[in-house]
Length: 67
Image 1: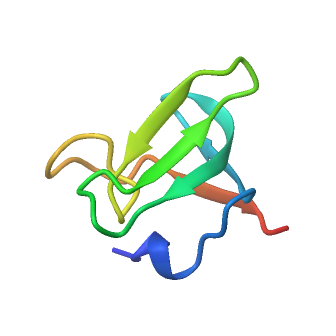
Image 2: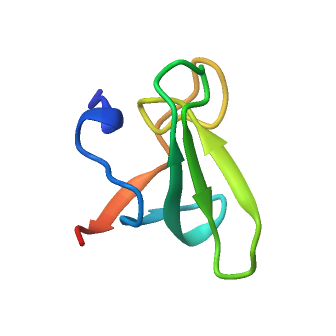
């Protein structure tokens, strides 16, 4: 698995089957769910450093393009 914290920046565009198109709004390496994304509809979702939504789940966060 890829540690997304090492390659993501705030504002990067991502895709998730859970929330669709989204943008990174916060990165916090001190938290378990350290990547926060926001959808165009204003909903926020949190993922772990590997893009997993649930503990020991599969990665559900994918990079679509870098800014």
